[in-house]
Image 1: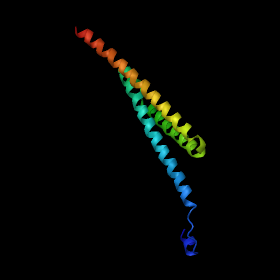
Image 2: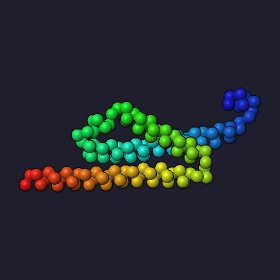
Image 3: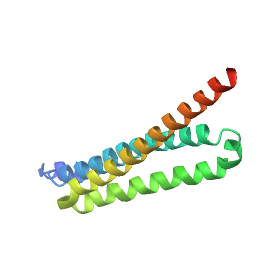
Image 4: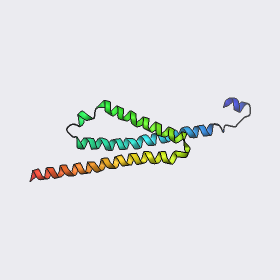
Length: 127
């Protein structure tokens, strides 16, 4: 850029699309990873409530690391598709949102049912 400016060429328009593309990729990657993280927390809560005695056995640090790595890889793939195929941006966004919201909704619905069942069981034992 300094050489171009020294020659009197102040045309830096080639940087703008590149920087915007990188910014869009990073923004979508981080947004997707955050959204999928919230979904993973919902699934983790479901496992904690459903398998309270076996939770430590089921949720190990290796499995958590695998889940987080797959979450970030999925986010990277979604961000790459978002950048590489601009015509399918809405489909990419809708797919990620639908999958995450559906999984979180199912998880929280199951949590509600399990907690309701356990509460009724405790109340029946108290009587």
